[in-house]
Length: 312
Ligand SMILES: [Zn+2]
Image 1 (cartoon, rainbow, N blue to C red):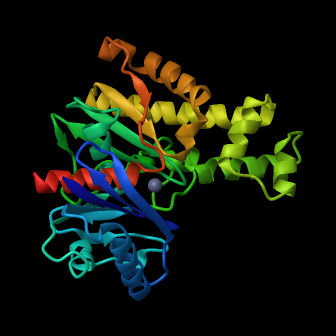
Image 2: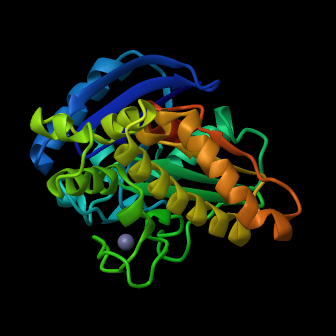
């Protein structure tokens, strides 16, 4: 069975033909256009390139924001793709793939669908997933079902309130998880330290225009005291958020993916230690915190997993 997975991101659209065992047969990526008409043309080009001659069974689309999975309507999508708000993703795809069923959902929820089908959540009925990137996304499977909530918002873990009087967040709340742990928050903290004139190798990164979240993690791993403090503090806040999720959902495992999860063991070690002592007494076990299997292709494969669900 051949499926088409599309991950419509803020800067890049990733697409791939995927078989029912999760193997990517063909893939393509293009820059995300800034308006609807160009997007239609871009999608047509990508679909023609990948799907011509393939017997497609179903297509899946993953995007940020709030997507109504029942109708594929984009309910809310702030940022560069806001022109998609109000549109049905199935309607966008219909002229390109006549008669092919189209499924759609939020990208983190799609990523969990992919991990459930082919990755780190395989065989699980209760799991929590966090995606660590520019912001923080999330998804939950409880008793074998992906939670969507009444309005499709369930799983927006970047907006767990971790400090009632904390920094203002893009969502209107204060002290959300992603104001402490996200690529943007970590970079902002690093800029602040440099701006205050602290003695740190981060200053050189700022001077060369190379201050990224990944660079802060690398500088921390190389032993820089300020970078270490920033990374450890952010990771402790994330671990506190994970502890809350463990208490809320009592999952078999917590799966952590996204670009920042590439930091690997230095990050996971803090998450495991901090989450364990906060949850051990109530849970009576240590809930595994494991890396997602899929990284850059998580959205594309997740979209294909949604398609597979729709086709079966
Ligand atoms: Zn928020």
